[in-house]
Length: 293
Ligand SMILES: [Zn+2]
Image 1: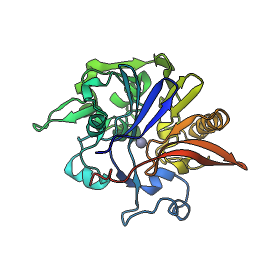
Image 2: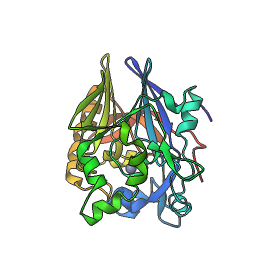
Image 3: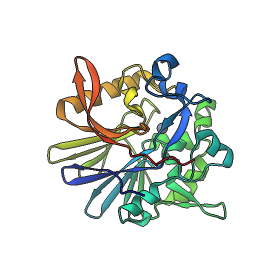
Image 4: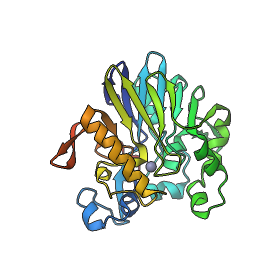
């Protein structure tokens, strides 16, 4: 595996790990937007699925190694692997290509607890049991997200967290519940956005006048930069729109780097305003060869 692509943000080096390419229903990714519009940029296969990435930024400074989101991992059943066209996950391979191992990861920030963001927090052993994928990391997630994931009486919410026992039990001791915006290490913060889920959070890096934000499922692909292009999964699409407008405006004005959780072509980019339309500027592209199945 080639070494992950990197970006320098002040004193931090950010390496873009990928948990691999997967596929998901195009309609789910773009909500109210008709297929006719999204399929030009994101051609669908015969099952209406589009190609997506699982981008997990690794933020490094000295001995600090902070992973943001963990992809799907290797916990899917054979049937689920077919549905999502995803194999075993690539995070460990990406770390290895950097000369690191899972035990070197010091912190994990989980934007939220959907299976494509927290699945890789655990690793399925050959025996079928699960172990912590990053055994020495402190894991940061909003308390409200944990509460909804663990115990919701709402049918829709419950369905979105079917995987949660697999993912949380092996790492219970490592989890630190956050109550709102929190600085994780100096220069790296978890900032609550809401929108996609009520307590969805972003990761923000600021150092020596340079900045980076991982917008996770607020702007999952480059196409989701457009206001009304929101995932059908969003619990509060209007809040998602507000948040993306705010962060993308800041990114344009202050030359922030922005990364996309699921864009199959671009890990991260700077954003320009071209006569009222947001377009990508300098971009860090996803290399070929990350397809798992
Ligand atoms: Zn997602």
